[in-house]
Image (cartoon, rainbow, N blue to C red; front, side, top):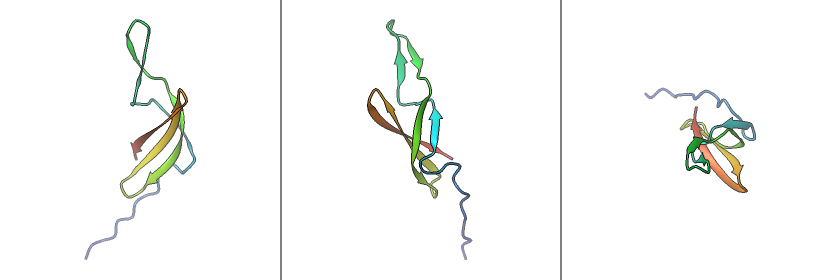
Amino acid sequence: MREKIINPPAPVALGDPYKFHPSAFTNESPGGIRQKAGKVKGEVKFIHATHRFFTVEYEVDGKRLRESFKF
């Protein structure tokens, strides 16, 4: 008989603010030198407790982007 696995609660909740360095893009200076992008502030939009990840939506230059993180 299989034992039921109980997942611990997620460390975030829907609507929580979340600050991070986005991996989706970098800043490029006029000399063509790429730099790591600064921190952005987003909001937790989706939590998948079974697969243990959450998705954050944030806005850059008027465009909404999403990035997912494991927990």
